[in-house]
Each structure stands twice: as structure tokens, then as C-alpha cells.
Length: 125
Image (cartoon, rainbow, N blue to C red):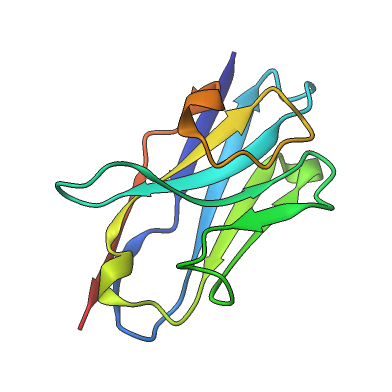
């Protein structure tokens, strides 16, 4: 079992930045790829970004390319999502997820094995 805990969300003005964190605990000696997803009210959960266990490969949704950066610190068992140039349409609950396939950057939420509880990001216009 892996437990994931997100933090770092909040209320920001459009154009602002946040750094979201996802701390993993439990069987963290096992290698996992990690992803970030988000869900806005009344919408389906959507892919945001993913990173392989090695950290060498990343993938982003087109809507966040150039504004968001995913990274990981394996020593701290933590994955980060730096979110810059925020827009009101980025408002959502952001979730991190762990995938047993260490080499994947899957955008399919159904392939992820563990999920955090989410952190709210609200962008005011």
C-alpha cells in the first residue's frame, strides 16, 4: 500500500503561482511513476502531468504545457507540481496518483493504482 498526501493548494490571483506537493508513505521502496490529475466542478477528472520513476521522462496536457512543471525528489518520496501563470480555468481539485509501471507517463487515470485525497486550487480573475 502507498499513501499519498497532497498539499500546497490555495486561492491565488490569475497569473500567480503555487507549488503543489505530494508526499508518499508506505511501500515507497517500490518504484512508481507519478501523475497529477485535476477535477473541476461538474467536469470529469483530467490528466495534467506525469513523470517516470527515474524522473527523466515527463508528459503534460496541452492546456498546461509551458506553465506547469512536474518533478520528483526520490530521497524525500515527494512529487511536485509547480504551477505558474495560473488562469481561472485551472481552478480544480488537484490529485496525485501512483502507477506501478515505473516507466509510464500514462494520461489514463484508470491505469493508476493509488490516489491522494486532493488539494483545492482556486484562481480568481
